[in-house]
Length: 210
Image (cartoon, rainbow, N blue to C red):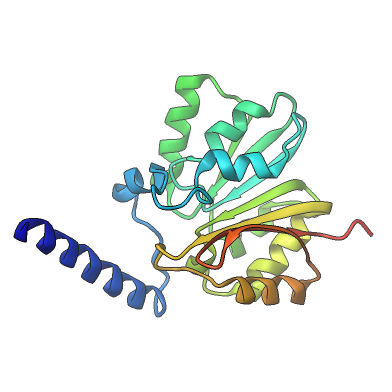
């Protein structure tokens, strides 16, 4: 019992330290912890890959951008759905993209492009009105300049397209619904739907069609 309690205390302390450090520095999840990213959280269904993808209403010919894709927890299953479309796996860590590529090669998936860049840098390599869906899954808090991020996303999203933002309280970079919505509306997004609750949610933000 004492051992379990000690482990829980260490984990809780580590989470508090990481959360504090994340408010002051840009600290993406390191590649050696990618196995944690792959796991579906047992305490909430909102963050599970199946749930996020189901709400996206993906068509086979869509073009999709997965920002901060990590080891490909969402990139790979989405790529399987895109018979005529493609998905761009974007991450600032090349080691994460290498993990995605290995999985894609094993499954013979040819519709994934890889972009090693921060959002503010990668936007120079993304065309205006390019994507039908853009994903930000527990990654928004890792981006230093939120205003620039939403501006870049709005620019590369097709009119009528959706930005899907997922946040859970267990993530040290957790962003509240009100904060996300305020940032999005500032750039012209409209709230289209929300799933979950205030501590674990997916918010769909739509770029107006005209």
